[in-house]
Each structure stands twice: as structure tokens, then as C-alpha cells.
Image (cartoon, rainbow, N blue to C red; front, side, top):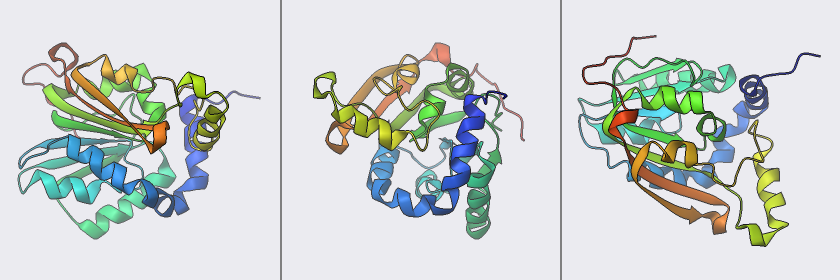
Amino acid sequence: MTRLSDNQRSIERYRHHAAGYDASAERTMPLRLRTIALLALKPGDVVVDVGAGTGLSYEPLLAQVGATGRVLAFEQSPDMFAHARRRAERLADARLWHVNAPAETVTLPEPADAVLFNYVHDISRTPAAVDNILRQARPGARIAMAGMKFFPWWTGPLNLLAWLKNRPYNARPADLWQPWDRVARHCERFELQATQWGMGYIACGVLRRESAAAPGRQGESA
């Protein structure tokens, strides 16, 4: 039997979750909005919605980038992206660009001023994905993250709960000790706070110059 890659396993998992995803994500919408607020978006900004899923962040992001800003989004799951496409069709907003593509190879149409990693555990644990995304952002770009993590080690069996909640969605459900660290190493002034009684986190930072797009670099439209 051929062993599936992490991306293939993730796509397979979300095939089963796509139809009910919006309803299941309602409980974390306040965290999503708190994380978006950490980006401190302003009119004219270009923001990347990493692993955009069904597009639940499209409207709050569009509301903050003004008439001259843009939202650039990508999602590797065809089933999740189908819902995002229908959402985009309803919005009919020219400021939104999105594509069905994996994080490791997606090419953005222009450098970003801000990057949102909202509950995208497998992406944030994949160095090739993180590197590809962040090198298409501007030096000093604002980074914001939200996701699940393990409780402190001394809580012992409680971490079984975190693992069980993560397993249906992610290819790496046990990699929850510091799930932000592969993004944090690219950042200055990285700040972290626990959420969900210690089983979640939100974080923000500023992209280091050496991790960012070279001056004048432009992406290519997909």
C-alpha cells in the first residue's frame, strides 16, 4: 500500500469535514477575530489568508483593508476550496484573490503586508510551507497565528484531550508542544498568549528582513 504524504492525508481528512466546517467553526469565531485584530490592518494593506479553508476570514479581512487593499488566499483542499469559491462568488469583490494550491508551492500575485495563520497546524509545522509563504511577504510584515497546543507537561492525561481534538483534522496531531515555533523563528517581537484554558494559543510578531521578499519582488498570478 502506498503511504500518503502529509498533504494527501490532510486533503483526505478535510474531504469529510468540508460540508459541516462552517458550523463547527462558529465556536472559534471570536478567536479568529481576535487573531485578525492582531494584524493591525489598515486601508491599502495586502494580507495573506494562509490555508483559507471555506473562506470564513474573507469578509472580516476585506472589511479592514479598505478600497485599495487586497486579500490573497489559498487552500489546498479541493472540498474546502469549493465552499470558499461559492463564498467568493457571493461576495463578488475584486479585492479578493484566491487559489486552490498547497502552501509549499503557491505563488502570490504581490508581496504581502500581513499574514494570517488561523488554525493551520499542518502548514505551520511544515518548514517548506512556512518558508514559501513568508518569503513572499514584505520585511516588517505583521504575522498573526491561532491554533491548538498541548497543556503544560505537568497536566499529564489532559493532553490526550488535545490530541483527540486535533487528530480528526490534522496529519500531525501529536506535534502540539510548540506549534508556533517554525513561524516564530522568522519573527521579531513574537508575543504569545494561551487561550481555551491552556489548550489553544494566539500569537503575533513582525517578519524579519532576512525572511522576507527581496525589495521589488513581485509574485505571479495563478
